[in-house]
Length: 429
Image (cartoon, rainbow, N blue to C red):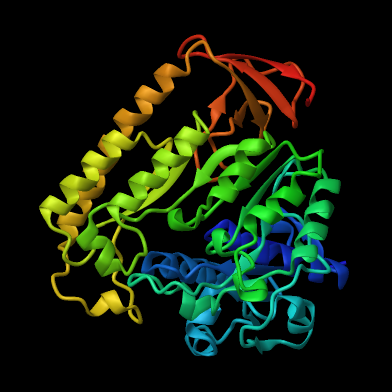
């Protein structure tokens, strides 16, 4: 049986695509291996959201093609966002690639590998995959409920890469969730480009709150985690469902991108400083202790020193549990690429560093308040795990000293008494 090694770059949404292709290939007779040196063929699922992601993807393609030239691999398969961004031109740049698989041709992965060439299809209706091979740890899984995006943020290529917003049918999502739970997942993260728009395209209205009401009936799942929510679409109904069900993690990933109104308008964001602050206050009134993760872009065209000072002040005041900071990347094909008043790279770097320093002080204060608290900890290894405040592979982790005598893959009770926490294993509730 031939062996396949898979590399998936970029976000969790990309990883779920790799899981679909892995399932198709496994059903076709390929054995998945975690050891590149044992593989007969390699697949790289690429990211192309930013220029830096394109460079990383192309670097990995070159590396795999060198292995193929030395006889270490029989085939190199390239899939994902870079395929959609460059289409068949990718074969002109890298003629030794054996197969291209676009993000709308995932179910044809086995056929593509068998026949070779480019399998690129237009965006179509979305459904849960019939075959899927989990590439995450057994206890934690991602569930993609929609793909594509109808927002037109000035800096973003996602609509041109992944197409218009498309939700999976309601019953299809529930069935896929049940399969993930049956496979051992006690944490399931709901993902999409915009999870809060789930259902709008199919049902004419958002149905995320209704979906969540049904998902929490799956009692074996300890944490349902909401990722990629838009603040203005976090409805009172959704907040009520979260508040009423403890299995919905007290966590929201809510990318805000900026707080200065002039910058938000140029970004073509729907939010304003007032609506963002009001939503955060509403959420924290309803769920004290809610962990909020966000992202900000600094150095967007026209961002002034005053705009940036507002952002730093907001970060210090808002108390975000986790925060990603990115310098603006000028991407051809986006409207912002043609904006005047592009910010110098040196200024972007300085602003990234300044915002990271501001957030570091916030995190220190949050961590200090956790001393003496008892929290559930989901173990990702015998040595470290995550609280509800930390999404897998994105946020922080808690290191356990000393390590428990027996590995825990479910729940662990963590007693934070000092800078060196202690822990004991506990059965899941």
